[in-house]
Each structure stands twice: as C-alpha cells, then as structure tokens.
Image 1 (tube, rainbow, N blue to C red):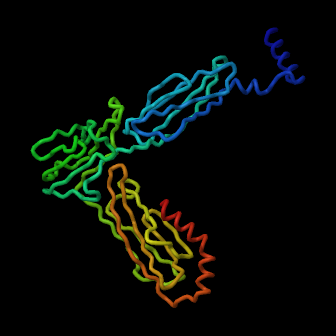
Image 2 (image 1 turned 90 degrees about the horizontal axis):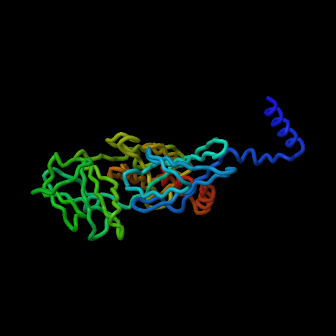
Image 3 (image 1 turned 180 degrees about the vertical axis):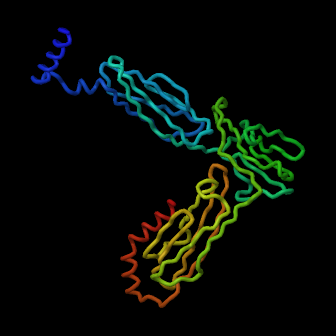
Length: 323
C-alpha cells in the first residue's frame, strides 16, 4: 500500500509542478497511420506502411483477407479476384499493452478483362461467338475459366492467338456462364492475374427511354429509363451527357428517373441511358431526342438566360456524368 501511495504522490507532485509531460502519457497509447504510394493494381506489388507514435515502441500486425502478418510494412500483390479489399493495421504498445487499429478500404484496379469480339456483340444461340482476354500480354500463357472451372477446348470451342481468344463455333444453352481468363504478367511469369469477368447470357437486356418527344420551356418533364434487369442488383444506371450542353433551369437524376425543366426554345436535347454490370462485362444503352418548342427567344434574352443558367448547367453536367 505504501508503494502505491508513494507512486501516486510522485505523479501528483510532477503534474502540479509541470515535471510531468502530458504528451508522454498520451504516447503510451498507439495512434497508427497507414500509407502507401500509387494505385493498388492487380498483378503488381504495393507496399503498405503502418507507423505509430509509441513510447518506448510498438509492434504492428496486419489483417488482410482473413490472414495476419507481422511487421510495420506489408507488401501485397493482388491476383484480381477482389475489387474491394479491407486492410487493417493494429499497433500494440510493447510496454503498456494498449492497442489501436486503423482500417482502410482498397480499390483494386484490374487491367485484364474478358470482352466479346467484336465489342458490344451479343451471344446468339447456334451462332459463332468470340471472347477476348483483353489486357493479356502476347505470347504469354492464358488460361480460361467458366464458372470457376477450366475450359477445355473441344470440337466446338477453340482457343486462338496464344489462348488470348476463346471462340465458339456454334453456341449452345450449356455455354452460358461466367467467363474469366488468367493472364501471366509481362517479365513476371510467376505472377498471374484473374480478369474481370463476362456473363454469357442469352437473356438480353432491353432498354428504352419513356417520355415526351417535344417539350415546352419552364415546365417539368419526367423521363424514365425502362430496363428488364433489377437495378442496384443486376445492373446500374447512368445518364451520360452526350452531344452538347444541357440547357435547363432544373435537373434531377435518381437512378432510372430523370426530371428536367427545359429553358431555351428551338433547341434539341439528346438523352442517353446506359445500363451496365461492370463485373459481368455487360452493358446496353438507349437514346432519345427531345425538341424544345415555343416562341424563339431574342438575342439579348438568350444572353441573359445563359448567364443565369451557367451554374445550373455545370451542376446538371455533374449529375449526369456521375450518376
């Protein structure tokens, strides 16, 4: 008891006299930070560093995809199977035993993908069809997978151009599935990258845009991107701006619904709806041309409107491009 009272008294005196530095107490608790340089890319090494302000020191442990690693640095080469990965570093003070973790979400960029050839071609039963391992390196080994199983060439299926192309002489219903290719990295033959995949499906997406063909300035109109897929589950929706600047006093985009108040009569606006599933390598789009009718605006009035609407146009473009 005397020992604890003496220790307490010493700490109290030091604190009151300024002899106890508060930063030394806080330093006992780790405060880790995590850093790395550049993008995280499939097939390429990335080194992550975990630092902390520990006194006298800290040990560091990493948690990545369910595996633990020790040390203040971690070098990882993604194989392409994951697009989003959680990385955690835990720092433990070697003296006090106190610990703290920091977590970051990594987006893995993959330059290898499976694409139909020619692009945007659709699979049709009993007709020929080809898939390319886009991003693979010529002359290096390529392996094809369907639903996780290696594809074996046969009388109907050929592998061409150093295995970089998978060709079907005549498609059958049994050929439907999720296709991926495994590519070797240039100058690093021991490193393999699994590509982004392509879903070979005979149920094609149907896309159309409903809404009026002619509109009047100052009134709100609704346009709907009609699709036969489940939004936010099977597919996502974008409204990219194509063919010029959108002239409007109001613009709202919410998934497959676009609301618009046109402003300048005598103009024509093109709307495009893109439906896609980037993981499956599928996309489809539809376009609609809308004419703004009504009395023609004079030159001075046009200048005034363009000045007032300048900010709205910028915001409108951001909505369309980022939705």
